[in-house]
Length: 123
Image (tube, rainbow, N blue to C red):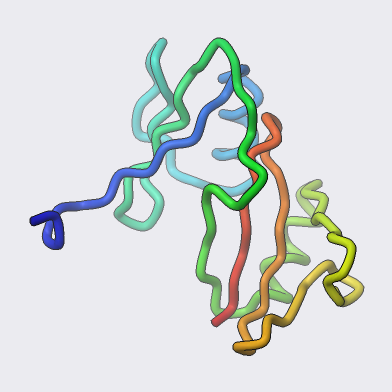
């Protein structure tokens, strides 16, 4: 039923100003709307609504991820923009924080200002 519908993604924020700076200025996403309810970004044709919420308990797992062609380059660019990449006990991550999964995919995790976990993956 929904196989031909466009996906809309959501993530919550307690501070729209910090979220705007992070998603637009740090990550380079295109802002298409700003309202009292949400910041709306176009992420390569997919709508991302960063929704204003009064309380937020960030999930303990990745809520948004990007498939990138060169994870080493993407990590370096984001690190230069001030993004800190997470390190997890038990995962062998390289000097940049990239983990190679059993399938061969390379993954790096980071958080937005609200503590939402985001990721980069090179498949």
